[in-house]
View 1 (cartoon, helix red, strand yellow):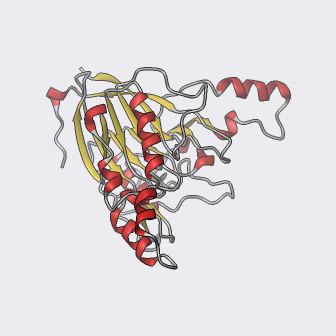
View 2 (cartoon, one colour; view 1 turned 30 degrees about the horizontal axis):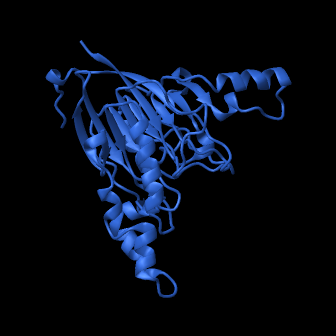
Length: 308
């Protein structure tokens, strides 16, 4: 018999504390942070974020990096220092950002906080369940931040079948990925990997304005095996449902005072779903979005599934 396991999912806190009224108070089995713990990857920001994580009521807290955490990507950090215009004061760099690799040493499992590198990880949980996750901090971009790849070259997201949760910093193209200007994220390779593996949940952040959750139904045998998965071909939109989104919760130009008030009340809800954009940072620095709580049925640790 499977075990109901409760997850708290957050992302993109950028070195900030939770605002009053938004801090997660429910005890959960696993907390997940989908990247961008900091804004500028400074040591002081990491300390603030780690103190926040320590206060979350969960025996296991899984964290990945993001593009703003470039000091966790040691080669990227070394490259930024080497390519900086003008000479840098080594003492100032060390004081603000730490030495090469120092930020990674701040993560301690003494408080149940685990920094996940890219790949597959398994955990025997305190509730008796076995959790198998895939983690990847990589997002497509042409700039020089951390954990990024060129969109034209792509990235190999090796998500195996049997994964329970895929923790990625960015969204897959086509699901909760539309930015304020209307453009979609460029992670076509991530979507293809998720569509093939079909994990129980894919949680992420990165695109603040696409905060929300969507329960996606996959198409069946009518999709050719040799067709590259995309959100056009592999999602059964008729059987899928948006659980919450910015449009359903934020008052717009056409809202009456009554409908705007109803949306404000719904901001206090938690929801359960498969695809979750959990960006805490809103579209502006003065806006904080809510975390998500998701329940997933997991196998018992004694019934460990075999991964290919």
